[in-house]
Structure formats: structure tokens, C-alpha cells
Image (cartoon, rainbow, N blue to C red; front, side, top):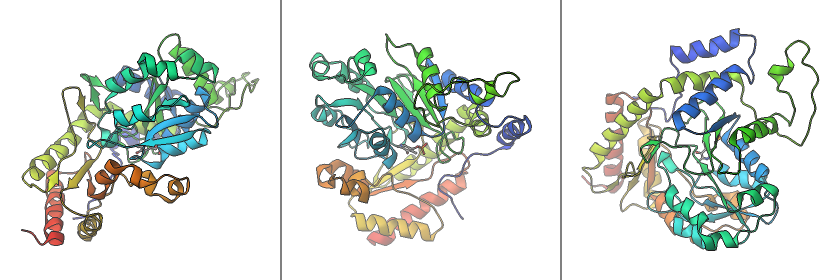
Length: 405
Ligand SMILES: *Cc1c(COP(=O)(O)O)cnc(C)c1O
């Protein structure tokens, strides 16, 4: 049985929505994007949502809007995908990496220790879809002594008056926090709509604006939407109307807008999302039930009194094995045609970041989380017999590499 890692969910409703966009005579940013933004607003309760062409571009644009410059520091976890750090580098600031907890997510104590007068932003990451401890992070940045340390160097930072928290929610659309879907826990939440994520537009992202007073989220939406379109005062859709030709370019914008033909995929998926999430939960629960029987299996975080994961992926850890044994185990699993992954190789272990001076020795828990981790597939199309096949394959691989029965 061949099990791919994360195929996109494409049913007839997705195909119909995309076809409608193709037949409409308008395929780039327009009515489908507006509808998708409204659906994400409805799901998350976020005051305003702007769709963009990727998480990465969205994060770069937000950090540029914040006004970071050389010497400014942005705190991120060492345990994440490279995009979290690359967005900071492309915006011209320095990623300050900190260690994580045993739940894979950034450690709030490590954030506290890393804050300096140069800290301008924190980007926590909801690894595997499990929300970070946002209550603690938000109260940390509001502490009087932490606020007193803050040195604003741009008009936006001055208006903010404290470190801004932008969460990397690439994995966590549909995760729950305090009884509702996440997206309003921090100042800005950015979802990824990349092909492997829970909701996709093939490539895309969604920026949920939840800025505190005195910011006006509607005004900010308009400002960022213009920034995402080369700072052109009129979008292409309006400009395409008869007589609508004149425009101005009022700043150095970016090209970050999402196309309608892409948005159509996500639009159809988000309308099915309650069902798709239930299916993901079914698979997660089946894995939990199967692996809880084995003392060598460390189950991933799922729920606590405040939080519930989006069931994006299933990051299983194997007690008592080395990194090499983990790699062998993955090779065994792959031999049965089951595609698994590792989330994540900590950034300091990658050539680029090693070259920039980051050292994995400074992130012991990140290494601990990584060295025995195997990510199992978790998506709606996995039928119960396929899930059982994945479970059997993993158990057999463990027995083979440890010679234990
Ligand atoms: C996928 C991912 C991103 C990047 O998303 P894009 O939309 O591909 O730019 C960022 N952070 C994390 C944790 C991711 O998994």
C-alpha cells in the first residue's frame, strides 16, 4: 500500500470553484480572494484578514511595515521551518533563536532570557498545529520592566509601545485556543496556505490583523493590501474597469498578492473545513490509541484545558533511540512505501544558519525533540485501513531496528 505524506484535498467542489474562476474572465486578485478573506475572518474571529501569495512573503511584508532594520532582533524558535528565520533576514533584522519545550513549541522562559533593548518582535511557531502558550507570551511583552526595555525605532514601533508578537501559524489554521478557533491570540497571526497545509491555495498565506488600539485594523488592511500590490493606488481589478486607468505608485511595495484562481481552491476547502478537521482528528486519535500501548512511543501534544491542535501532522517520538536509529527506522518505513518526515531539523543544523554562527549545542531541547522524531501522515483521505497500515509499518520498523518484540 502506497501512502503519500500530504496530498492536497481536491474534491468536485474544489474543481468547480477553480473552474468558475477560470471561466469568469478574471483569474488574479479579485472576488475569490475577497471571499476567502471573509471566510477566514469568520472562522477565526479576526477583525481583518489579508490574503497573500505565501506565509514567507506575508511575514517579510509585516516586518517591513513594522520598520525593523539592521541591528534589530526578532526572537524565533530554533526548532521551526527555515521560513521563520528567512523572513527575519529578508526584512533586514537578526533572528535570535531560542530553545523549545518538550511540547515542541518555543519556551517562554527562553524568550524572556533572550529579550534585549534591540528586541522588536517575537515570532512563536505552533509546531504541528499545537498552539503556543500565548497567554504567557502576551503577558510577558506587557510586563512593565519588559516594556521599559523596549526602544522603538520606527513610527509603528512608537505607536506599539512594546514588542510585537506575530505568530507563525503556518500549521495551525483550525487549532483551538480558549474554546474558539485561533487567530486572535496575538497582534498578528499568519497562516500558510501552501500545498501541504490544512487548507491550501497551492501557494498562499493569510495575515490576520488583530492589532491593539490605537491601530485601526481596517486602515491597516488597506495599507498592507496596497503594499502587497507594489504600493499601487488602484488594484488591477479596479484598473481593468473602463475608464479606470489612472493610478499612482506611492511607496516601495512588494508583489505579494494572492490570485483568485489560487484562492478558489482554499475557498472550497474552508467551506468543508469542519468535516476535514474531524477527519484529521479521527486519524490522530487512531494513532494515539495504537501507540499508547507501547512504552517506546511518546505521543505528540494534542489538547489541554486551553488548547487543541489543528491535527496538521503527527510528530511521534521514539524513546531510547539515537538519531541514527531514527534514520534507520525511517528507511525501514520508506521500504514499505509509507512516506514519513521529520519536523523539524533544527535551524542551527542547516548549512546556512551554521554559517551564520548558530550552534545546535545552544539548543539542547530542540535537538532532543528532533533526534528521535518521525512525523506520520495525517490527512482526511487516509482511510482506517491505511492508518492501520501506517501503524503496523511503524511498529514493525521499531522492532526491526531494535530487535525487540
Ligand atoms: C510551511 C511553513 C512556512 C512557510 O509557508 P509558505 O507559505 O510556504 O511561505 C513557515 N513556517 C512554518 C512553520 C511552515 O511549516
